[in-house]
Image (cartoon, rainbow, N blue to C red; front, side):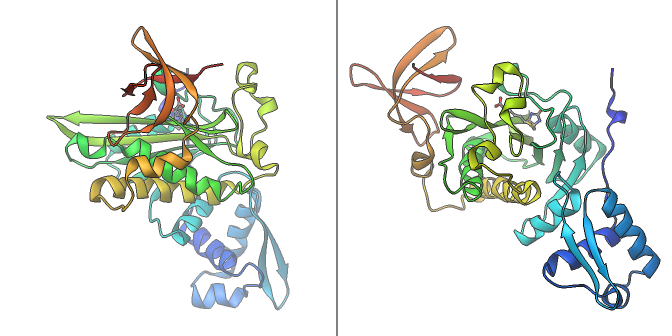
Amino acid sequence: MSTETDYRETKITEDEFTILKALLDAPDDFVSGSLLTEQLGIARPAIWGTLEKLRNQGFDFEAVHNCGYRLIQEPEVLHPALIRYYSKKAATEMDVRYFPVIDSTNNEAERQMAYGRKSPFAIASSCQTQGRGRLGREWYSASADNLYLSVLFEPDIAPQQLQHFTLWAGIYICRALQSFTPKAALKIKWPNDLHCDGRKFAGMLTEAKMDSNRLRSIIFGIGINLNSNPSNYPKELRTIATSLYAIHGATVPLNKITARVLQAINQAYETCIHNKTTETLPDAWSPLSSLDGKPVTALQGDQEISGIANGIDISGALRLTQLDGSTIAIRAGDVTLKK
Ligand code: BTN
């Protein structure tokens, strides 16, 4: 059985980040060795050593005498320096910790909080050994081409203030991802799934810790199928799950997307904490809803309720129009499309 000590964070040094930043900032140019040594204060042997280390992690560089260095390839998997670089570009200063393998990024976020890591922070991974979904389900987490990500906040507020956090996160994340798949419409299936053409490509799981009616911590976890090929998924998922790669018909940039998702999560938090939005929740939700106008069945305890999905109300509940014309609000649970 594995223990938490089996999991190793991939750390980046300030020299690595500084060199990569200089190269990424000048994608079409050579960055001279003297700029790195004189302006950025990195000794020549440290530059060579760092470039060699980065080559082993999937980067590639062109080195030309009297010109300097040029970045010619980024790794195809998640890399903490790239997540940090693209996050900074998106003006999101989030402390992101990357673990190639972890039991669950939500678990690691909780452990890091217990060790005293200052929040907010994020845990990103390329493989979870115990990824979990809503309602006690397992989350398929074996593909390094996907993203497993958790963000921990310690708000110390009344829980009602964050009751719509996951819905807002879904809205902002869906909008952010849409820019990477311009030809296919990405949708949200109430309450926590992202879908395209009836197949799920992402799921969200929010876990909160309360204490005397205050919300002490909130861990928002999201799994997004990015560059994985659904034909490699376990058999039971192949017909119901998809990935952005399958949707878009080409690979998508993992690290840039991670940065955009972090930005979207922050935006959802700001919206809830500081009421920083001019849109209402139902209006923002409406164009993204995968269920609107469709016949669905909601499971409420043992009871099945059927109706036509008709948006969400201001409390975030799913509105179902029943046969007699009345509307019923579904506040929690699972909803399935009627065949
Ligand atoms: C669902 O659709 O049921 C929710 C899936 C949530 C999966 C993510 S992956 C990152 C984080 N860590 C976990 O163990 N689960 C969430």
